[in-house]
Length: 460
Image 1 (cartoon, one colour):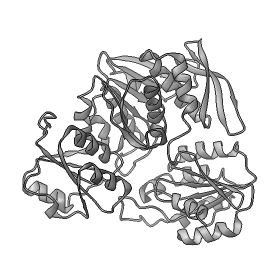
Image 2 (cartoon, one colour; image 1 turned 60 degrees about the horizontal axis):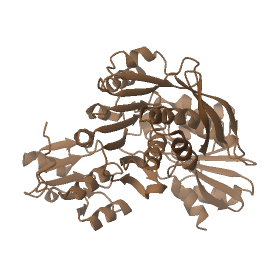
Image 3 (cartoon, one colour; image 1 turned 90 degrees about the vertical axis):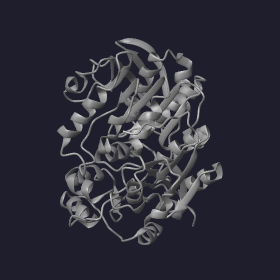
Image 4 (tube, helix red, strand yellow; image 1 turned 90 degrees about the horizontal axis):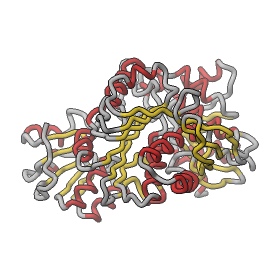
């Protein structure tokens, strides 16, 4: 595998899919180091505009001509197919090619304290919490987050210290290319079944990820994960657990919630009280998320008041139970949840949030996931008082597998719950214009572009 010499800033690096939220962070890091950077994406965006302003050469549209003769390295996202014209041109010219994950792994080697946060759910939230923690501790970290963190004005922060924090996604086993000293594993669940064969295959991947922790490193892992020893038995470093089980090292007690579903709790380490914490984000799942951050803070010897302030001041990443505004007296919230476990957590939180009727407009994400988890989706979505389904967001997929949002709606109705499919976004907006009442709570939910529905309503 090609290894980039980070001291040779004369190199020209080209990113296929530079507008992606993770790819853009790597491009920005190279720009800061003085490399010549170019890239392409299918559409312009604030991210590509920002990179262009920094000096990157941005091409909108991916064509073979973008692979110029002076390019020394090509980096591509996992979404790029073998018939991509730029990828084909790079192969023809024998230009070295790395995946985003492979290159991110090389970047991690530049830092003394690289930290990777993994799990089927909650990665962006916990990465953001850790980011607030290290910034509050004046650690000056470099951060690569899978969502927008308002306090840093984006998804990337370039620090000057030895701390590097990133999300670690299991899809296509990309996190197996990483070199973390510290790992957090939040949970393991059946997802990305267009790549993994089944849950056992996913667990095997997380087992290999856990084994990447070096002898002087630390694995912080949810102790409630089923058959935990299988995941951890090859770990060379220290293992710390957190969760709801009594056997976990870090636990929470005396949990109370305010009228916005935000928790206050006492954190304990092996039964010893650490202190009282108040979260700025709602939901019982975030108590467990916060425990992982408290454990990491102990590992890094960060003082208690800093940890308390970081967790209380963090009010969420963009698209994570994000309050967008009010439309005709109804509160509009947006959330990225796109897996049944995430949906259940988000809707359970919403049920404790002030409202008269709970509306959810959900946009299923990929045909593969929708078909594989149809029953689980139907159960989780039934927590909403009123459910509206948008057309399935295909993402990287072209085969609809013979299903649609109406297929999911029919299954929900069979379970005795209401579900409607008004049509496209315009139809959905007209539906809510007629049906939303003062005091209602509307959640736009999904990993695609369903956020536009709420934003369009709020702009009227």
